Length: 113
Length: 111
Image (cartoon, rainbow over all chains, first blue to last red; front, side, top):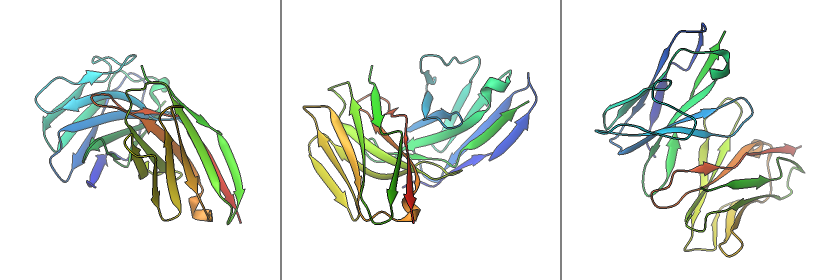
């Protein structure tokens, strides 16, 4: 399985500001994904990020709020823009390695005051 | 789109007993069914998966069964240990389809 790291591991932010989360993989992968996991809840896909193309967003998530970059095959960023307390959550990146198999990063715990 | 249900939402078992978690899915095109274990404060870890061309898969104390006709799949953990305590998520996906996760089952193994 791939080794995946995320930065920051946690942050406390003020309402109205933005935070960019980084995801780094130790090998080249085609498919990267960003998920949100609210406290005590399941995982909800925000968007799929493929290198060289625009991210594909799931229903309920928009590019203006969650802009994503995928500059190469080992790196992606997710920005949470104009944050409100409702954005407090854990944000996880994952990568597809093998056929369909997804492996997750350690997550970024975001608290918005 | 795909919808995945998972039962029970919480499960308590005595150490050494077996635990079974069941998921149902709605999209007959789904063909890949992974199970993830998430310990408190940790990332989800893939523990076992099954594809639609097999009915059962086993890895030591854990096994997964799939019934395509009924559209359900189950995780079986035998000889449970305290370190099995975690939240377990099932998911379903197919060719060109993203993962849809179930709501999770909190398993507690009591010593």
